[in-house]
Length: 304
Image 1: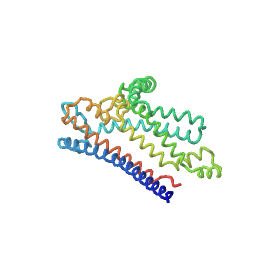
Image 2 (image 1 turned 180 degrees about the vertical axis):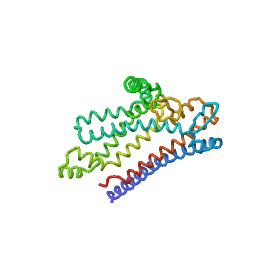
Image 3 (image 1 turned 60 degrees about the horizontal axis):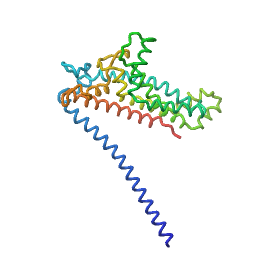
Image 4 (image 1 turned 90 degrees about the vertical axis):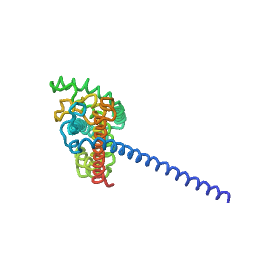
């Protein structure tokens, strides 16, 4: 009877511990949701003051942004185009190099080589973004000017985008490698049994099977590039003009927020309130990218 009593006490203690752990995990999840709600509420409330003075249509579709000039115009298209321009360059580099690295590590590299390369990629992810910013203007831009584009501006979207691309290579490479590694070995063996060569197995079987994870890594990398601040603030400049030329200086949404937040506009003015409108715009852009990524994973996910 004493043995049964002790077992019962142990069972009750275990169940209680499980409930406490469950409540703790629920609390962390609710804390995340609460933080998201607070952020959204702050952006919406502060943006409402801005949109009482500026038309939302003018903000979304206007092609001139002169918030810090005497003749104030709040058309966010130049900031949007600058953001997409630098992010496009970044994802172009990171998708190419990152996917290539993932394929090599997953399909070709020996365990010894993989043990060397993966930590190097992780080091890239740990470098402060301010270092990437100065790397862009003092290394990438001079190289581009001396070898390819003599007319490139000192501050330009191309160098900033390339620096961001290097920064997000580890994200794309790591997630793509996980997706490639998750492809069942039976698919590879089936392709080999039909006489396919290794290169055919990789690009006609493995990559298509892992496509959902690969595209999701691209989207996550793009979202990371869209939200980057320090690199574009240092290397792309603060010139909010509407241009598709990556050799010119541009201003991104995050760079504008950083510029105004550091004291270029007094608190409470329309210029200061504009950073919340820009932040809300950026928030919905990143949210849309994440939703697209989730839809891609659900539609083309691997069925094991």
